[in-house]
Length: 192
Length: 255
Ligand SMILES: [Fe+3]
Image (cartoon, rainbow over the protein chains, first blue to last red):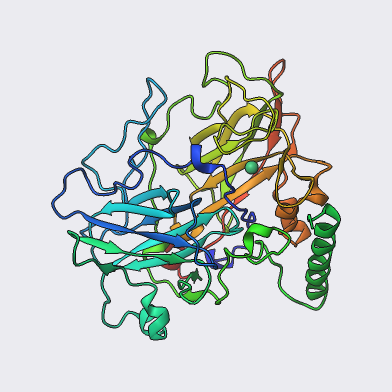
């Protein structure tokens, strides 16, 4: 029997991250994906909003992306731990792990600093929050590639929700807001 | 007017009934909770109303690969939540062990498992938890470990207490441990909660009941495993976790 006919196991159901992950999941330098001081560093930031347009102060965002050379292997060391004190060392300042994790602050704001991905020009974003029973995936496109099948299949107003916009008054900075619900609801993705 | 347990029970029962009828009519099993689940009041403004947009992945699809973790990301004591302070935490010491598998039953190796939980009194070491139960100076309730070559993980901790929350009047969460899991692909990411067998609070909890499929709900409940209990030390619970979602290797194998 070939591999693709192997019976599948039913998955463990998802549950909300709840309100109290804040002392467990975020880690220092979680949003510092770019190696320290790298000249190509960009900042991606924005707000997470609920269906009433209110900012969400207890969302957790994760980012995964290709390295600048387009590779998708990642590297360990996002949350290096200190074996002496049990605390955090921070990233090693050399390796690009491709992974970031940041909670929103009391204003619902987040920011990550990273390197522009090679190949597909987007950061994959996974959204967790109290009240959200199953996480949501979206993408922050840093530019709009010609012939992208996802973007070209969307109406303009919906496509807009996936485009991180360069901010003219800030250095190498992009704005990417996430609306969980409402008129400006972000496009969320399902993978098959 | 304050929302009572009775109000919530009625809503839960209606949604359960609707799901059971749909199943009997041939609808597929729902393995995950719907994001729009009214009895869990916080979900009302935090779920999208548009359908998810399907992405048919190819090997270049970023989400079909995922972050890597390694020895530097954990320390040797991170999976023993009872040894992170100078003294022993209060409560019933337990060992929670199991395997992390993908949807084809293959072990997920070298991936990060993170846990967090309330202490034995049902209080989180989180500033916003104002449940008037004691904090335990010897228990923080955070752990992490990398899975072994067979996908196995193990934690030593204490059994968390039930705790109240403000979804409705007299709302109590059954004892649970929060789990965060990575697979080989970002699509397989999972955050969930593990429960303990025979908890009398199960029927009243809209978060557990948001998983409307009975057999899916059962998969959130660990089993007491006497062989995992350690003499004079801890009681053993076994909980295997199966991740959903495709990965690049599946596509390379031609699905
Ligand atoms: Fe909890």
